[in-house]
Amino acid sequence: MTTQFEITDDFIFEHNKKAGTWLVEDYEFLGRQLRRRGIEIEDLTARALAFQVAVPSWGVGTGGTRFARFPGPGEPRGIYEKLEDCATIFKLVRSTPAVSLHIPWDKPDDPAELRGFAAALGLRFDAMNSNTFQDQPGQPLSYKFGSLTHPDRAVREHAIAHNLECIEIGKTLGSKAHTVWIGDGGNFPGQQNFRKTLDRYLESMREIYAALPQDWRVFIEHKLYEPAFYSTVINDWGISYHCVRELGPKAQCLVDLGHHAPNVNIEMIVARLIQFGKLAGFHFNDSKYGDDDLDAGSIKPFQLFLIFNELVEAELEGVAGFHPAYMLDQSHNVTDPIESLMMSAVELSRAYVQAHLVDRAALGEAQHQCDAIRALSTLKQAFTLDVAPIIAMARQRAGGAIDPLAAYRSSGYRQQKTEERPAILGISAGIV
Ligand code: PSV
Ligand code: MN
Image (cartoon, rainbow, N blue to C red; front, side, top):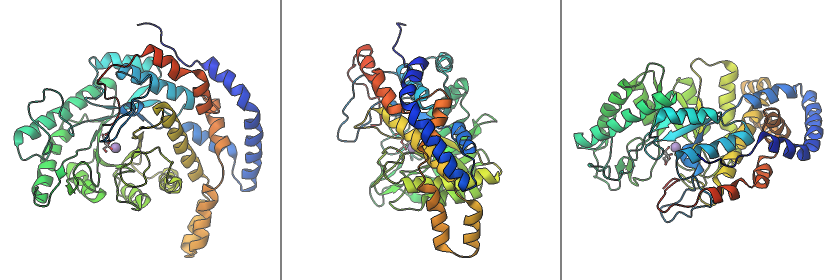
């Protein structure tokens, strides 16, 4: 393989020198401010250093809508180039050491080799993702009217076999979880029998569950609508919860932030799932109208904070069985995907650190005294504090960039990749 351009540690170090002055000043000032509140800034920086989120293999390609996809220059043309981009994100932000793989979009010919390639870049593999919402070229049976819930047993078996294959690949890659999202549902009243489709789903999922290695989990991802516009089989967290209960302890509910009706109280769903020991983890993104797949924290940062407030509370309490998998799931249609994923990872670190700022004793007291205003202002006090110096310091200490966006842009990475990766026709690198 010819040498590929990469952003070096030296480059990041030199870039940081320019931003370093203000960082030390701001960090010291914030440290003094926090000390007045009885908080030690170094404890928060340690939290920021520990926070990790996986990036989606499919997210580094330019996404699209059902109308069009506008490919960007220097897009990765296969999984090896996608991993290069994931490694670039990791180098700059240092909180994204894992990649969540989508099969067959990013199916490796040689999973063991891919694992080695990733490891050499400092990356590992997070949850696997199956795809039975699309027909693959030459596929003998179609998913047009469903996959795991299709009335025809042969189609269901085909979809089950695909999921088992994902688990097999994942075993070689070192993954420990499998995520199942199906697009199954109906577009017209009467098209599907609601009870029968759910029965068939559970029957199929039992076979997938039975194939899980002993130390794996299976994540069930619900979604309100799309591609089915009238009824979706696994439409909300209630159905998802019912299914994971039916399946057993290795099954948990995955929350994709875009998969709910507008204004749904997602943080409360998160709290419920934590309480029931069934929170698998997240597909983080943001949305204004539906499953927009916008960048995390770009539309409703307060909601993101409130979700992390629940997560941090559970973490601090040491709730049994609480180990959520954090992943991004976004579609970058008009931005450079590397920039979007970096900035989203930063937004998640921000929400995580802010949630650690909540004065939990004051909140508990306000709740006990039914003092709604004090409870809200306790949360707002944490949410409105600018913790940028903390997360920038954590990045720098981990060898990442103080200002990842500026460092990335000045590195010329995308221009270099544009030369190294001449476009090939027909790739569909992002979400279609
Ligand atoms: C479906 O909208 C989803 O959120 C699922 O996680 C898919 O695997 C992913 O997007 C990619 O399309
Ligand atoms: Mn998702």
